[in-house]
Image (cartoon, rainbow, N blue to C red; front, side):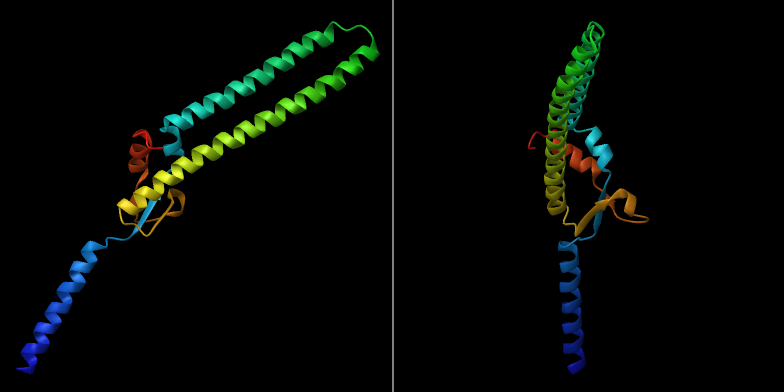
Length: 152
């Protein structure tokens, strides 16, 4: 009788463990950040905005070079160079702020979508795909779907 009770208890414990393991999948996911970024419309637009600002700065320098060539005296050229350097520095700082802001926005949106996938897929952690040698679950496409859904 004791063996039967012990056997039933062991069987019940085994069932609870099996059910518990099914309810909690766990595991490690990995993401190809570059792939996600390339397929995220917001990130694509951010790249276009940053590139447009860079082209604007290049055009500014081309225009200033033309103006510089039209100057005749060394004093005019020196004053022009100083003024242009100040203006360019301000434009360059604005460009760097824009770039940093856009990159941060993209990163935050991708991170938020990744966190949601982590919860939905019941994963323990999500790593960059370059640190996974074997195993894990690629969640890149799931994150891309989340980002394209317009929630972020």
